[in-house]
Image (tube, rainbow, N blue to C red):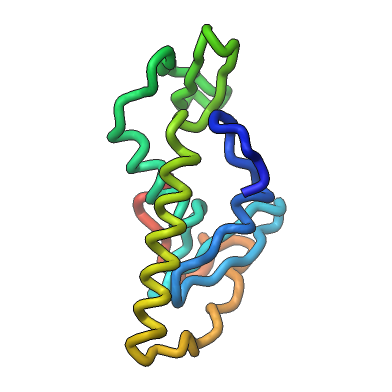
Length: 148
């Protein structure tokens, strides 16, 4: 991870540097955003390691001095953001997100090492082709119903 700051939002560059689990693919959408495809061909809009870390961080108590707030976005949805008056900081990611990502990466590396040791040489089929520009018109494309 590029940033050594313990409390900073996770960047797109850092996201692209994260390893993918076996049998996952990544492609880039029309707007330049990452699209992840699992082994069943379902489309996800969040890196699986980041999703795992985000969910784990959300279960953790906030570090001392941090407060969670709710922002109302322009489309009417709400998003949490975090502030720390002592550090004079605000950020979208949970303050423990970076630590949880580090743990999730280590877990994934261990999982892959165990798979390699068990005889799985990592020779997985290539990821499926990128989704069409408008997946709404492709009835065979499975969508992740838990889009976050």
